[in-house]
Length: 197
Ligand code: FES
Ligand code: FES
Image (cartoon, rainbow, N blue to C red; front, top):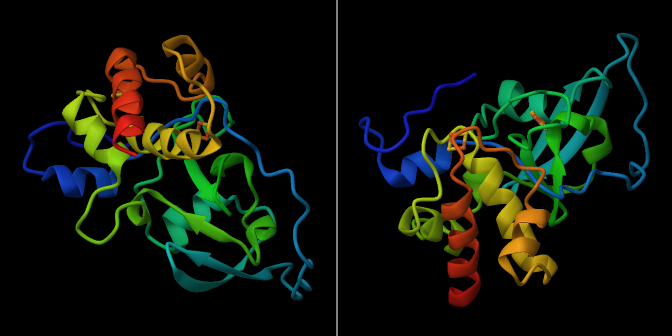
């Protein structure tokens, strides 16, 4: 699994948060029906038009391709991590139309017509998202592999407007697994980002 450099290691914090990725807790799966399914070509591939981090993208993909693979392998957005690839770790969490989803369980074709945000698109230019800043301030990571998924899940959680106690935050983030056990810092970061909101 992509061993991103954690702290130090030559990567700036900004680049770190732009390239690292990981898990999700309480992640919402994309259950909404795909917009008009596009016709498949002779090769079975379908055209998919999605807006990724504000940029319109057109893909021609096998209908079995996951959103995770489309982001990483077709669009080069490797900040979203592939951990388990089976919906159990949350490393692949992204936002689809503002809701957190596990991109390894989401077919790229079902994202047709939707807006996708990845860790690379969370900051506002040079300004880190409040959750990104809080993860740095609160030591919300160690190796960093889970971190982009944690951050994407946490950013969505704050918008969802629930999970006010530590226990509720842990429950709402329970789909984002951190093998390093950075959970205390993660909970603190979410509370810090909420106060800064
Ligand atoms: Fe583990 Fe998607 S890669 S849940
Ligand atoms: Fe290492 Fe979470 S910081 S897996």
